[in-house]
Length: 71
Image (cartoon, rainbow, N blue to C red; front, side, top):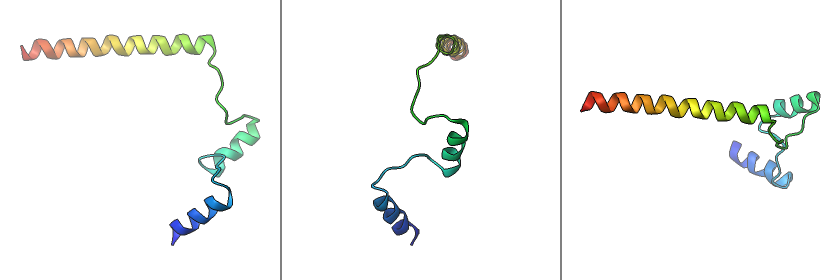
């Protein structure tokens, strides 16, 4: 059974996994990147805030238009 093999492999490795797939681990090695999270740059934070505001605005418009149609 495949699940028994998976459990055995997990026990052999001490329950630790380094990546979702071997290809991601290999890509991280080649790029010299760490799987650890990093802090966002200010420009990334600003972009996320802008996107969130736009989503909120569009959501409000859609909900308002549905409210007017059902009223």
